[in-house]
Image (cartoon, rainbow, N blue to C red; front, side, top):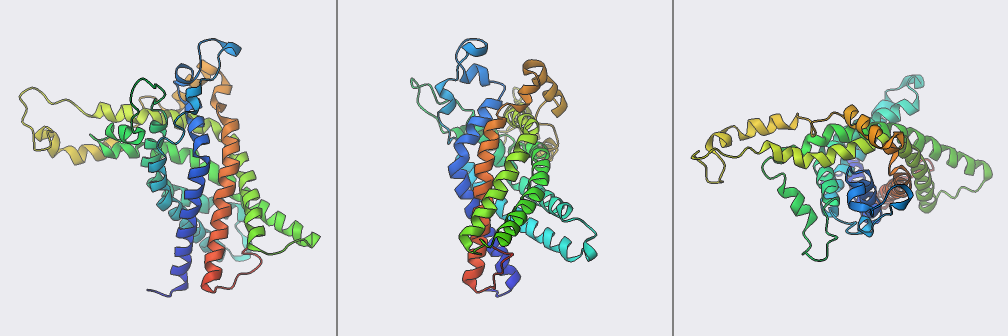
Length: 349
């Protein structure tokens, strides 16, 4: 095994990031499910009782099956979170080292590092995000029929064209890029300010617990602000992700009568062109409507407030999720480095 300090640090980042992602997924996933259902175009039909305005009430089905699709999310977020933090730390370190006389402001460096990391992470996370949000919408509330596995049922809709799962990449990146570009500069600045304040007051203990709490508060506060600002983009992203399954189904063309089929049951001509066609399909939009058209449609139906549906809930779960995520990540990374014998300074905690 290599004793290269750089490889050891990268391993720490991957392990800490994966553990943080697993912890957050289990704790705040139910809130994310409720948020997805509130932002879906079928919210009123599926999750409210009959009535208009104040007479309409939220149905209990909104809070049932809140862990549907969590398996696919956990599997994907483990590598995607490791890739994110490895890229973020690497780009931030590289830009900082090649920034003589601080010509580039630190917030710009943090935004560039987080944006680059997000593009890498989204490539891994997109399929799971598409599966997750469609699985969250599977109706298992009817007790008169057997429950189905929401994840498997969703995956079957993509079996004719698995590469269609990546069609939501642009939508996911469009939401996450401004979110992280806002969150990480605020997070780094808040954390630095809290540390400086505690140093001035003489209350800084430089313990791992203190560092984790400071990181969690800074990350949660920054994340909640970024979540509110980017809620309209998140609403549109949710609509696009939910349309991905229907879009993938349309790609599967039925075989003509009498057409020869291969061993898999697919038409021979289709089988020959399958790979090329599938790759082309990735570039197609997941919906016949563009992002701006979807936004205009939401405004026409629900007004501007429709673009902020689920915003308060997203703010709460982002505060909890971001706080836990970065708090656990930073604490885990520093713990592993200290256990390995690396020197830990006050600025690291």
